[in-house]
Amino acid sequence: MLVIGAGQAGLSSAYFLRRAGFPQGTGYVVLDSAPRPGGAWQYRWPTLTLGDVHGIYHLPGMELAAKGMHRPAAEVIPAYFADYEAEFELPVRRPVRVRSVRTGPDRTLVVDSDAGAFAARAVINATGTWGHPFWPHYPGQETFAGRQLHTVDYRGPAEFAGKRVVVVGGGTSAVQLLIEIAKVADTTWVTRRPPIFREEVFSPERGRAAVALVDAAVRAGRPPDSVVSVTGLTSTPAVGEARARGVLDRLPMFERITAEGVSWADGRHRRADMILWCTGWRAVLEHLAPLHLRGPGGGIVMDGTRVVAQPRLHLVGYGPSASTIGANRAGRAAVHEIRKLLAETDTAETDTAETDSDETDSDETGADPVAVG
Ligand code: FAD
Image (cartoon, rainbow, N blue to C red; front, side):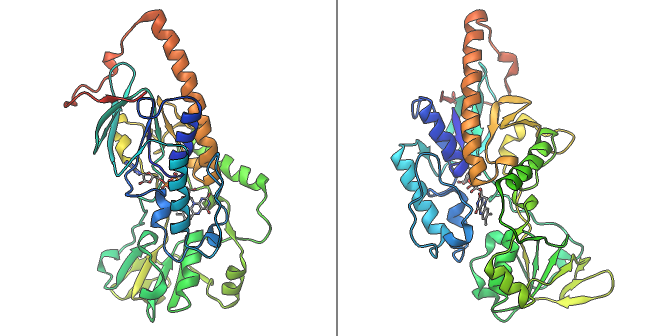
């Protein structure tokens, strides 16, 4: 078994593989492209504190014993992940980037990586979204004389001091960054749709309803919205204060970008030195391209965590499970299904002793892949 990615989704999957009795190394391995433990948390901006991300769930089997909600999430959570990997002796190899996944002989998937090729009877893909920031395109974008950045580039408000900044995007990250930057800069907020601030406590029922919407999309083969995008924005005291100061007065999307700023269809123009695109992410799935999984709907048809067109592949932390609680549950569900699949295959193999050589992508050459589970 091979897990790609060691964020919340990959570690949760590895935990359940271990618990199911797969031996480390020969039974399963985790390949992670990041230099250190922590998944995407190691890259979050330093001003994002643990208190700002209070919605995170513990990994299965070990609580986050964090003290100090004011400490950067980018320090606390990677340290927790490192302890977790050590505690459960999870076989994480890093930095190892997976380049492609293809079908191999004898009902395997072959995973080509910086550390060579691995043959696995099942693959859990848990590569998250951080590596695939989404930048929409607007006319004139390339003519802008100022600087354009994405949320992934944000390192704190200092570099915005005294500047005119347009912040694009209606999600939680946009609101958090806007509140910080507005303290030192002249900000303009633009979003496609009017933002909805949720005043009431977020109930488990509403959470389930939001996840169900995303689940329906991926079952139908549509690309998923993020779970957070369908849950609305949380009205924290900082948000209330920013709204009272007018920082969160939002304008609709501009029509074009000029050298000096942004323009709307009604002739309005706003000068800007910087445009910050808080426009989210897409799932990191490029390495799965050889499997030709995308259907006419533009997405991958899923049944829970299982890819319908390739039952040996599970996507964990994707679509409805792209949250810390979702990733925990999905890791467990994926391992449960993989065990079932292997039990069925083993029975079929003793019955027929057939081979699957016609399934193989035979154009690949090189050394024999290392078998992992
Ligand atoms: P990641 O943490 O991104 O881990 C993916 C791992 O895969 C990385 O280590 C990466 O290096 C590796 N990888 C990627 N491609 C490859 C490859 N080709 N080969 C090998 N390795 C690869 N969710 C919540 O539930 N609560 C929150 O409070 C919350 N706050 C958030 C705040 C921000 C700013 C953002 C952007 C997201 C937040 N989320 C939150 C969503 C959150 O990202 C997920 O819930 C969760 O952390 C994602 O875990 P993951 O394992 O799917 O992905």
